[in-house]
Image (cartoon, rainbow, N blue to C red; front, side, top):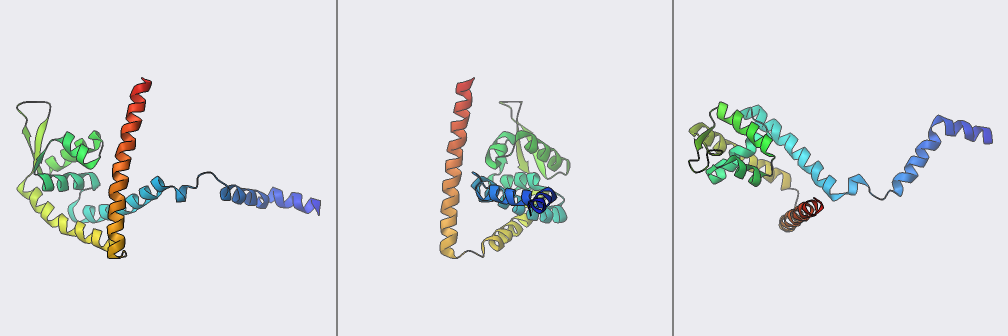
Length: 181
């Protein structure tokens, strides 16, 4: 019997049982960790949306965010777009370059600060925005149609609270980093 146990342990069955026990008592379970859960939802939504935008308009998520932001606000700098969309300046710069090359956005120099430019949609960019917006709104509707109106309101409130709390935590981390320097 003891020899049989040793053979089973060597075959990996004992290891699998030990790993299962470890998983039950883990301090942190990734699939229950809110930041991970939010990232999974974000990733899945971005994958679906990016296929729609790539197929219809030959743009990716960063370009879509720039187009929609300019469609919403009219004229902005790349820095302001980055702040509004929470995208890194490199992603914004690449998206702007691609959209400019495709003549979907126009650049106008800022005479007060020649290091930056004002960006806006061209007529073709505005047309794209007006075509993209209904698709995006329909996708969002389809995504949330599983929620009751009360759940949707609660979810929207929770998202606003989580966003505000996240911004506060980011500010705290930045302050801690500055204090350490």
